[in-house]
Image 1 (cartoon, helix red, strand yellow):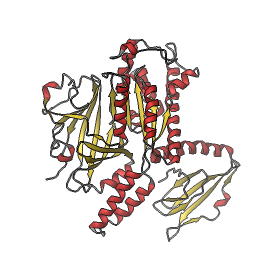
Image 2 (spheres, rainbow, N blue to C red):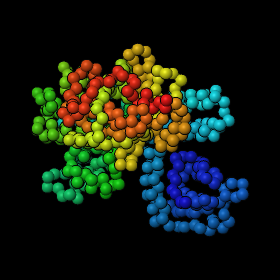
Image 3 (cartoon, rainbow, N blue to C red):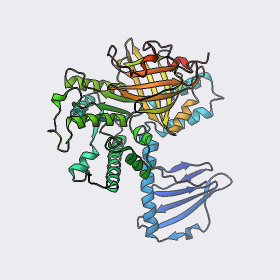
Image 4 (cartoon, rainbow, N blue to C red):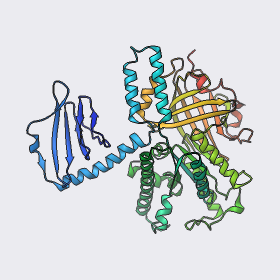
Length: 506
């Protein structure tokens, strides 16, 4: 089996047959069962090939005569460099930056699992504590999207949020909007633009947005400081400006998918509703040189933007049902506080038990999500730790969630992405008294609220359907008409009707 591997400034790579020692230079490594070929690029744009194989002891040795394979080919070298840069960026981003768990965790888990059968109960418990400590204390980097319709208050919100979050000790980066950069620079599409021009522009826009975000992510990683990246719009915002068939063509030509652009990139999405909905007297075009939308266009665009992110596990909609803009900002700050683990009042997510539904007949735009969650022992009956696998159309993201009760009325919630490998390793430490919970989730937006219809597929709650909505306690919530006949009762405070209880085996 051959594969490409582009390690970042490391000297050793463990393969199935031994340990190959690599240089710090960019390299292309082809691995087979017994042979590793190292293409090492010199500073003079030449390239030479060395082959190593494993001896009887499992160590790597250089094959005789392979130094003769020396190629003075600028074309080969440049081709390798181009491929390597892309591969390094892809590997580095997806396997490291987005997963706020470093390789020490994988080493610790491997050691723990290999010794699991021979270890004492105390040793196993100590290992679990070490794993949780490493997960919880690894320097976090949170990537948050602030989106919304025109004149929603994003720019003002980001400036004030940065001040407040910096006062809490976070390093805060504001990621500029790629569309504004391109359009103020003169690059844009018009009603007369061809399909090819539109696809080229939107493709470049999303790639620019991703590059800017990833570079700020790298700066944050190197700094080793707890960091929050506040993104002025995200990679799915362009979807609101395109016809569905054109958007799908854009996805296909770039090899992208909505889960990739939505779930794998962002920890949280906060949609600020335009003042054109509910605060019309404050709607203006004066503070943005590229804003041209009328109030009617702003309303339509706002609805399309929020629909673009439906399906994200942490989508929040902040409307204008407030007494002041400062109150709107406070709502955004409360949401971020929840995301970064600052103790706050217990969950404002309301829950409703529904009658059994043979078929979910949705007459709203929605997304269908597959979810698996596994509970991990915490040693404290008031605390809950779980790992979650969430996906759509075969594309999955993995996350770690911890809820700690600080005191009555206050809880600390931590959620962070992990890799698929970490998910598999942590699943081996699952609570043996509980089974994995499987759910089918239908996500949609109705009357400025983000709903999730949770249908349990196994466990004690098999066949049960729970409707959840993010709303302040006591706040009036409009239930979609097609669901009203199925509502039995509100169960927000009924912990017996929860995934944690449904997972119990006995």
